[in-house]
Length: 286
Image 1: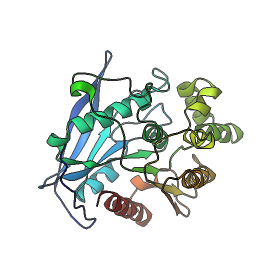
Image 2: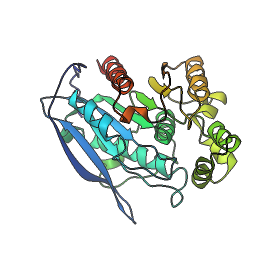
Image 3: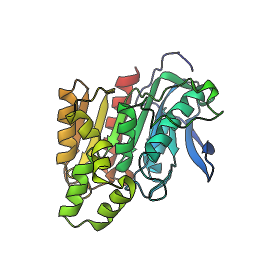
Image 4: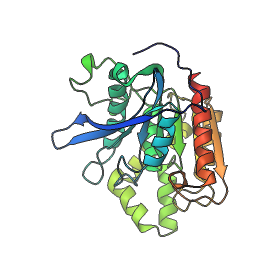
C-alpha cells in the first residue's frame, strides 16, 4: 500500500469511473463490489460502503447516490454485496465485511489509495455490521475467511474511521423496540439473522461497551434523523455517550424531522449530511 500522505479536500471535484468486480468467491456464489474510482493522481482516501436491509436484504446499489457524490470529492468508494439471512445468519455478514477490508488493503496499489485512509460507511443494519468489525477486527470468528486473493493473508481488517448512518448500534434494544411497536418485519428479520436473543446481545456494539470489553475504538461520525421509525434516536444517543466514556471519539449529528435513509434522497438535509461526512473524512486522513 502507498504510504504517501493523502491531501483530501472537500471542495475537490473529480470525474469518476465505476466498475464491478468479484471480491469474494464462495462455494455458492461470486460476491461483487462496485468501485467508484476518482480519475486523478491520488493517492485517495477509501471508504468501504456497507448497505442496510435488516440483515436480510438490500444490495450494493442502495447507497449509490451517496457513493457517487463522495467519489466525486476524491474518495475511492467500494460498495459491496454480502451474504444475507436467513440463508447465512450471524456472523456471516461481519465475516464478509472483515474480508472486504483486507481485500481492499491487498488491492491498494490498483485502487490508488493510501494505507492510512481506509474507513467504512455503514447504513442501518450495515452500520451494525461495520461497527462490530471496527471494534473487533481480529476476532477469529470474523476474520475466518481467506483466499489466495489476499496474499499470505497478511492484512488486518482494522479501520481508520467509521461513518454510521441511521445505524443499528444496539441490535437487542432495536429488537425490543420492534416487538413493542409491532414492527413485525423488523422483528422477523432480526430473528432470522441472530437466531437467539443471546446472540443479539453478544453481537451487539452497545453491549460490547456496556460489558467493558477490550476493543478497538476508531473515530466515528453518526448521522441520524429524529423522525426515524426504524431506529429510535435513543439508540445512537446512548451509543455515542458510551463510546466517549470508553475513550473513543464519537460525534452524533441529529437531523430534525428526517426519516430513516434520508441521505439517499435529494434534499438540503441529505446534502448537509454528505458535507459533514466529507469534512469528517478530511479531518481523519489529513
